[in-house]
Image (spheres, rainbow, N blue to C red):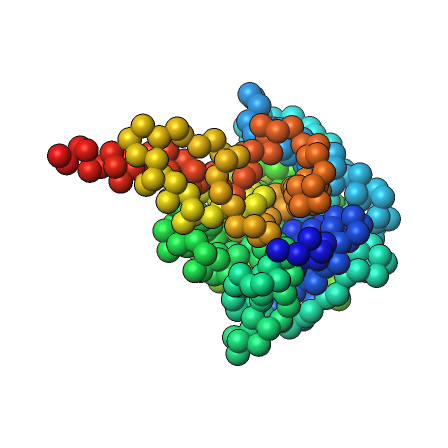
Length: 393
Ligand SMILES: Cc1cc2nc3c(=O)[nH]c(=O)nc-3n(C[C@H](O)[C@H](O)[C@H](O)COP(=O)(O)OP(=O)(O)OC[C@H]3O[C@@H](n4cnc5c(N)ncnc54)[C@H](O)[C@@H]3O)c2cc1C
């Protein structure tokens, strides 16, 4: 296989833009593909999201990751996006479990996506392909070949990074048995945010979190024309298994109920926020079985299975890092509800891996994100062909 540093990145949301930036600034050539007519058109089109730590009483992988990710993304925002043009620093009051006030930021993800892509473009090594749905992915003499639905070649390179959120699973068809949910366990979680123009005094001094986040006021001079430049927002709903993007009144009602829990003193919340019907934005989060991202080299499930069968009853169990991989094929997906916090932190460490640099993330924490972890755990539970035979005998 060629050692040329050229990658095809599929999906141009937070994950794909972060990957493109991290690779091009390391000298890689990147072709970035998206089915939409530009970057940040799916979950990363979120009008405003919250960057804040995931606080738990005892540390968990997610709380540790989010502490690192928040600091990392905050530094990226300060480096690349002027305040008021895509983000604003704030604090958030946690009203539910683990109450307290935490430093936070309100961020429009597309501002970060655009900033990362601008930096990648400035290297002269990024080529964006819009309105380009990748239909299939095959191993080829040059590494990997992408094709559209008409079997036309879209690109070929030694490395591919799947950053297509839920769309990543379909691209692995034929390489991993994605119909076996345990091998590549991604699932959709629909979310709807309610929002409207913020007029007059904000209803709270800072964002409030309790079964969703109420943002009393967010100002963004570069907000896309479809949304107010000064808005309030409440959200978001969390509907596991739903994959449509239709805005509906039921979700508005659920957001209104959550808002009344946060602000019981605002007797007529609807009236206080304006008589006009609430605006809404609905999209689909991509979550994994253990709610952690999948970031790293894609496992070669057939080779792993062959090893398990070959090794017999007394096999030496493989460690996670010993799981065979499909050479040159990587994933950064399953960012769930934390794309702002985790996309660039994960992309940085995945780019280090791809570039043959030492990975600067704490090793144990990085291992929790390995996309091979699900098939690996399964392989350790599974009786080998030899063991199964001995039992029957
Ligand atoms: C209602 C709601 C509220 C949220 N609030 C927050 C928040 O407060 N804080 C936070 O951090 N996160 C939040 N999130 C989550 C955040 O939006 C996501 O984690 C993040 O945007 C995921 O980025 P991504 O790049 O993985 O996916 P996406 O942005 O969905 O990008 C995937 C891209 O892949 C493309 N694609 C898919 N298949 C193909 C294919 N075959 N060929 C070519 N292109 C393809 C799609 O067109 C899409 O552009 C929220 C999400 C929702 C829905």
